[in-house]
Image (cartoon, rainbow, N blue to C red; front, top):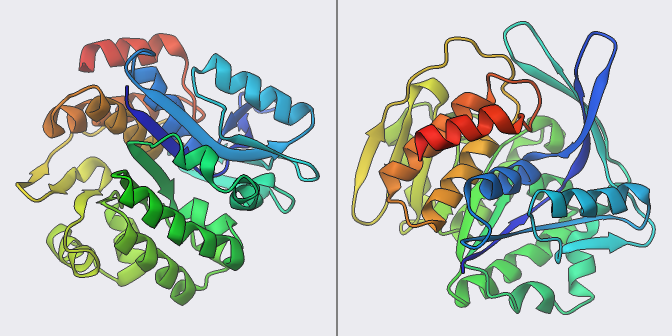
Length: 315
């Protein structure tokens, strides 16, 4: 049974339900990856662990309960004795584009690696995960000291045969618009990962490169053996590994309601399909179909009925 570990910050999400009401849930980029992974993968086929941190309070209790309801393993959801979970609010314009407000200065997730280190990292390493996924948002919320703990941990995981997946998910605001610092940390992540999942927009913002082939060449300069999956929304994606390279077109969505979790649902669905034994093209097409359904609904987590319909049609 494959073990997949998704590392980062899960938060309380407030998404607009009506002009006067907001709906509460738990989300964040990596939480959405784990959720859509588990929605696609049958329980007996794949175990997904969300490696995060929360407080020893009601919000922490509710998060753990939510993970259980979503069939996500909570063994690596670590409880911080003083900090609590962060919160963000999503607002969406008429074109489905998002804007965010965050309250995360005391987020427990910022000290996830410190909490793990107190246990000698064994709680993670003993799982011998097949896949370890993290994102640029994960990197951004960590302090310099905490981030420095991640690199040797990735090396240990790679030595165990784990596939390290990294999605840059670059957000300039989280780096205080310090592009040089962000680029330096991202380059470390690119070099230590085995599979890179950037958007073409990520590569353009980080390196000023806006075309698929040039973006692939830049990433391969940093990590010549990496598997690449470069995504560009309705313009499709470029896939490259040691045996093949191809561009895959997608069918654009006519009515976009909310682009929240578009990339995250894609990543989770792709991971699930691969873990279930689907080939690369089947997995990419499945992930694209789920992401297309997600952006036709409000919020990161869409209702089960339309999700299941899209899943059954795509698998």
